[in-house]
Length: 304
Ligand code: GLN
Image (cartoon, rainbow, N blue to C red; front, side):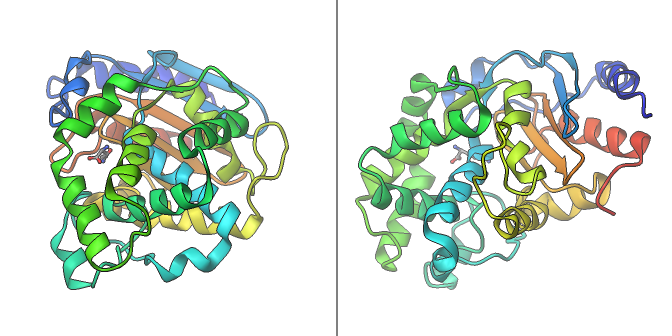
């Protein structure tokens, strides 16, 4: 039996020594108020056991991690038809890159970069009368936790400074790949990104992907094939222009957010979340990546 708690404690010791903790995202002003020294990990084994260290029960802004959850909801409702509007190739570019979108005539490279997530947001705005309420209900349902909520301050803060996302949405609209108003789609998108969770809650939300589409309460929310495909997209696209590096160092499907969270999973085995708000130059949690590299090296558990 692997000594998971011992390994998490070692990781905590290791990363605490690190003097360069990366930089907090400030382009969304409300995110700048976070403590740079925060650090937490939660590990949820599919067999039911849980382990944690540090600030694993503190809420943080999950930001782009939400893109996997909106994708899951859209796929569960629309099925593979959504792939007529976006691709599944890694972009090799930053999450907010625009020139590729223009070059490829408004078809985003994948659903985990901003333009792709905005297309998925458009799908959900078309599907639901109250998309914000219905998406929140979905997240609470798969997680089995009704205390999860949006942070309206963060959503409004991003709305005020989200010029790049307005540019992406307008570009999509100009290529006829946005069916609703730019304003309505981005209002939904900024709210989904503002979702707050603890590391422990995040592992529960992603349990469905590690458990062949069945969520924590054993309800089937995705087919096995849909869960498999979403994991493939996380592996190839979950870290933007650092997806190769994450596969190389860590070797798990996962997703990062500019709030400093990373969630990663080994199908049929575990889900692990890390939160360390300082980011590297590519917008991924610096210590979070380091922590997960130590975790998969010490446990010898990865998909490879
Ligand atoms: N809400 C952020 C944005 O659209 C999400 C980016 C991220 O977490 N990488 O810029």
